[in-house]
Image (cartoon, rainbow, N blue to C red; front, side):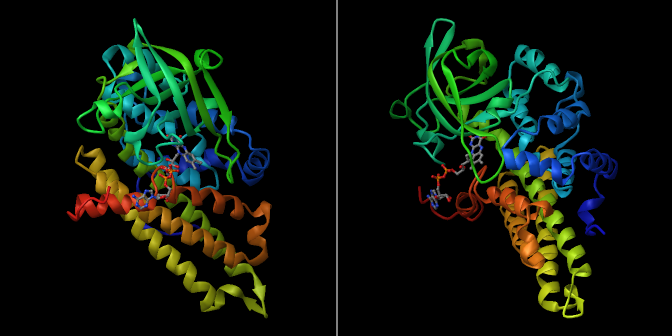
Length: 389
Ligand SMILES: Cc1cc2nc3c(=O)[nH]c(=O)nc-3n(C[C@H](O)[C@H](O)[C@H](O)COP(=O)(O)OP(=O)(O)OC[C@H]3O[C@@H](n4cnc5c(N)ncnc54)[C@H](O)[C@@H]3O)c2cc1C
């Protein structure tokens, strides 16, 4: 029996077909990928073939032209089914940078091929070891040289770079010290990864506690054609910011899916598992944490819906997107912990998928933005408190 919530009513046909797609990728498929830290290429190819990764691309460019509400339904169902959208979700939000800020030529060049599944835009390069969350301190620098930029520097935690054809890359084009505002002087480049690797770009995988295909990037005089600049030079911070609300809403939807997965599994197990001559779910000590997880997740889901509705209406939604991501990531983490506890020893067994999902959902309190930074945003933007940095 699946958890009942008003949230599950939206986009029922899409949810249904995503669930059917995901049924072909059951637990053992993900367990094997997780064990070997291999990329789920066939899962991503199936999502691409069936058009799910191009739902946000306008119909004029070959996508389905749907809103973020539909995209949240897709990713929620992927995660609720026990699958992991982390291998593919970036295509949905990185594409927005190109769509909103790319020139007509750039959009015509890339978007139809992305929609057709011929080009993968799965990588997004912002974070650097020396900057952390303070993006204004990135040091990767692109110097203009004739018709090219020459890029030098380093990025860290750049996921899916080995499995993407294109990378949206944030660089400095003016040193921080030479700008009036620290967020000025950055620019966005679209990098053709296939020609870059071995010609100034080295990709080094990082093994982590979850199977996320994340990497370090080293730039050593990489030449990028100047026509690959997206948006205005020096305005790159604002160019990528507009995609970040979409990213937060979509990740929040994945957390809602994870939470439902944990609650479904815990409730089913609590109904079946007999200890001391009765189902463990008869004990309120087992029931209440499951019920609490459902309460928290349902509230978070409403905030995800609210943020998605504002986004689709073209309204400002930065605070709501942040709040949705924070609430959903905390609700899914509570549900994950509850699910392990409900399963006792079996919560640790690989074949139950719970320990894998537990590790996977933990990420979202740190990436793409950590909880403290969300609280800081809410404090200063929504409540008018003084800035601390
Ligand atoms: C698996 C994985 C995949 C990722 N994929 C990508 C990707 O594809 N592209 C990309 O660009 N990045 C990616 N990231 C990076 C991710 O966005 C960052 O890890 C995240 O934003 C946190 O930044 P940081 O690790 O630099 O932490 P830091 O900025 O070093 O912060 C460390 C801790 O200190 C806290 N902190 C920092 N400053 C303050 C403050 N002023 N007040 C209170 N607390 C503070 C933070 O909240 C955090 O908990 C990924 C990370 C991981 C782990």
